[in-house]
Length: 228
Image 1 (cartoon, helix red, strand yellow):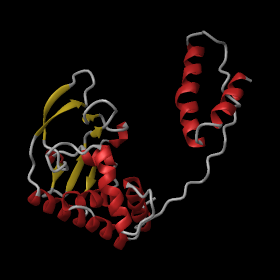
Image 2: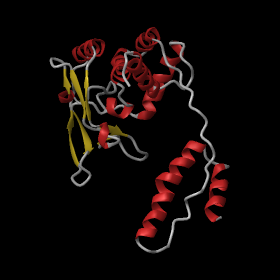
Image 3: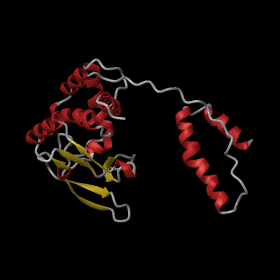
Image 4: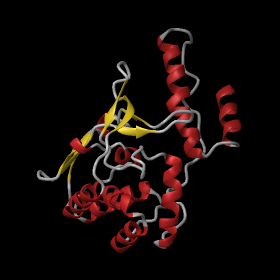
């Protein structure tokens, strides 16, 4: 009854999807660990019903809208659109991309880590989001051409950055980031929103359209091409 009351109270303040993350990601494992440690006999969580999560509604851009969005961005950031739409990369993976992870001759690109931004410190390199996030993508011709154009126009300028891809051995090293601000520093999330929103509006895309929606575009293209 305490857990059901807690869920009812939290449901008044949290979105159903956020509450589900807190419940299944924190509360359930906590009580399961308590059972394993024999602090309690059974977990009080089973049988607790959470508010239903509404079906997600995504706006899937058309190919011409993807091109329009890229053209609406400053030249320095245009290729980001093609990497998200053509390879399905997350924002942190794109912003953390280094030159040695790009093989234009072999037409492949590797996710090795991500750029992470937390309050109170400068962006730093961290482990990829999940174990399966480490992956190698084939580069579609459009993305390969866009990357080649970008690298020719904006040569790499190594910039010292904290590298915590191995949390036990954090280091600071010069990173060869492919995408940076005009001053060569990593792209901060706060900066990106000011760059991105005007381009979304200029491209006629709905407010709130983000890089994650280009991942949905990528998945839609795969399904249309016959993927499971």
